[in-house]
Length: 97
Image (tube, rainbow, N blue to C red; front, side, top):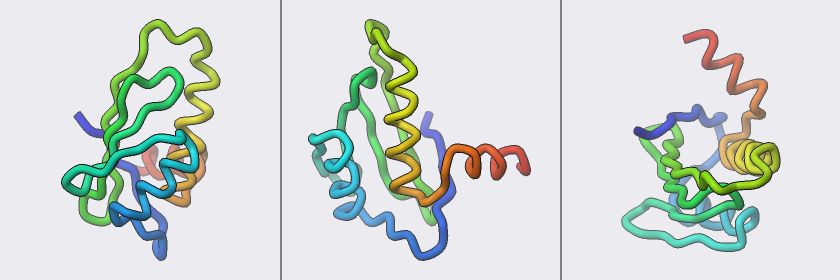
């Protein structure tokens, strides 16, 4: 099940731009059929793709991770870079639903 994140107006989420932003953070990334696949410390695999005007993210966590706070920070920073919304702004939008 994918998590859906809103994207600020004017922020492009087409596949090549997603791949470039992901590579800035993780150093790795692969584009297949419009979906970007990558890994982060503490995340075994991550699939990121555009779903309409929103961003969809599937993750598989690494249960042997020693530093979950670092993983959460990295993930939030990555999503903020892609969507333009900070974690506080995303939380506020979700609470309105």
